[in-house]
Image (tube, rainbow, N blue to C red; front, side, top):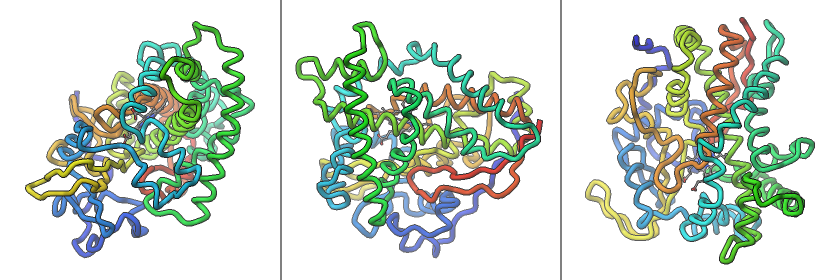
Length: 417
Ligand code: HEM
């Protein structure tokens, strides 16, 4: 197979002055547009970067790998970290009760209850359903017309699929995206008061809705039902199982985790590939290359750019000692472009062979929904580029102003066949 030309954007290093005083809580505008020059400079010069609040930011692939694996030293529990930010609010209750921000035993119990429903074998029947939804979205795009690839394409599939997996009836899905954006938005390193209030209100409304949904599902479900919600309800009923509140917060988390990130995978794929006609032609000629292309999109434009852990014991990196209690930000976006692991890390290549990126994190918290995300990304992108091989941007894309979740608000495109 020939090597794909180096067509994806070339990244310059940010100057040392630009990153002097770099603070995740006070990010410069340029960072939201393109954080990679900042990441490259920090990974090269200060890979263990102290933030003004005493936390550290890690940018090397090897450091993330170590921390994801060592769950004895590095905890995912956010009860201490989120207290000053969220106080006694519902946002605090939510973000400290869902599986992603917890350690065993809660993490083990919830994960065990849901992984079966998200395993590749269980998800085989999902593919025709994904294809149907994508076909109908594409049928609504008039050839030659201008359309918004976020609003009219990328946001719809993930929300439909995750709602199906959690048995949310079709006519009740409308508020989910707004709730989800409000709750995830509150996870940004620094949030204004109105974002906090918006997030809190969203958790409150989500909980009211879910209580009712769970009651209905409990009344309707049969012992052979295998969907995520029925599995979680059965776990609540089991001895030593989940508590009702844990079930509700896990549902909120899964609904949130399952769509915003996947929306951004699809939108980033459209945004990247519309600038790479040779690669798109190659993918259309040989669709078996799509899974590799999806991994490159995930690596280069990781929808989740930042993760966090807290050290529960003292530890060392590069001979420097850090105390127990140190808060750590794991920079997925930087690790996924680490030249120590990826040759020409900023270029999009279909011939990288086997590689490990951290778009889905690593270790015991490895994304439980990655098979769903990969199926959706592959089917959505292969179908839209097959229908419109010459998709072109008509105006500059509008990025969502978020550091943790990278993606777009708007992506104006012309549908050229
Ligand atoms: C491109 C799309 C996606 C990306 C980039 C992504 C990324 C991630 C990352 C980075 C984590 C680990 C966070 C951490 O421990 O610090 C995670 C966890 C998780 N994700 Fe995803 N995710 C995606 C799609 C999905 C989907 C579609 C679902 C559900 C169907 C899902 C469900 C979960 C769950 C349940 C966890 C928690 C796993 C655990 O803590 O054991 N994700 N995801």
